[in-house]
Image (cartoon, rainbow, N blue to C red; front, side, top):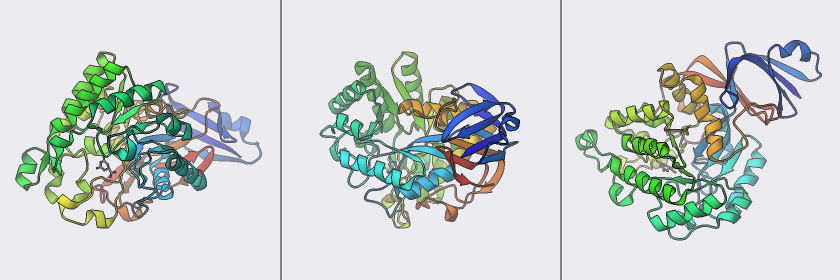
Length: 429
Ligand code: DOR
């Protein structure tokens, strides 16, 4: 099967390319990228030609922070439904966090996820294994065994590693395997009982709150440990100005740190919680306007390397309760790209640097052989219609999670074609 993507604007940060070109895909691989490939190839047997004038052709998008809930919480999401959501959002590769039931802290769970992924045959799913047994923060998991089983990184995401000595050892072992530790930065003593950001709005609403320093104190600690151990550290879901500042300084000093934020942190603030919509309850919480501005600055100046959705699907029964009791997290796979394109429309990022944060940079964090359109690469490709306006309707989500605060929003820009390993898996035109 041969596929010719004709006349699109090809944007590939790994090749530093942004130009109108044709892309030829054969047997699951990128075969050629260049001008006027049509004439030379139109007679090829079995060729499908797609006219993509006015569309943007990018390496398949990569989301390194998702919660797929399987095994154990299939009523919230499954590997299959999460993969369908990924395709609709333009993602060809996703990594999934280990807070399943059982926790992905051993070879059999990692192998189960990989087996299910192969059975689904939709997107590439890369398991992230737990740092500590049951993510309880007491004993390290078997890093080498988990790597051997297919894990691509380690994280206790959803929970912080409160014990600094355990975090130190985790960094040392992961570094010896050339794998990242992905830190969920939250001091549990400072955040205890909080359900939203500590500030004026929390006082007004009478909700218990989580101060910025709950995140920042752990960012500071983990940066110190990364410096001390020379190990690669990736900081998940950065939400505060102080975190951005410290990561910027750490990078300037040569510490091996990468960092991500999620679309809700550069789009929303704690002010949105005035309606008590539990779909806005998320950890870390939505912060102040100043924090949002700093997160955007961090994206612009390269302090924040990656945009990840932190796709956290929950069932209605988890969310349709009083704010204090609601599960935290929001679905993101199907809105992440459109919200991120907003950064380009606002002039905060160029298209090339946005795509960098959604392809080659996340691939680099997890050392995935993905994220570019070089000749010979796996043909994972996403096509974006930058002008498509659509209204976010959670009833139409592929995800089982309907917990999106963006329901009803008018969005601009959308993935219209998602190709994984040379096969069209999603098409919306
Ligand atoms: O709000 C959140 N939800 N934050 C996390 O860190 C975990 C996630 C989840 O698993 O639902």
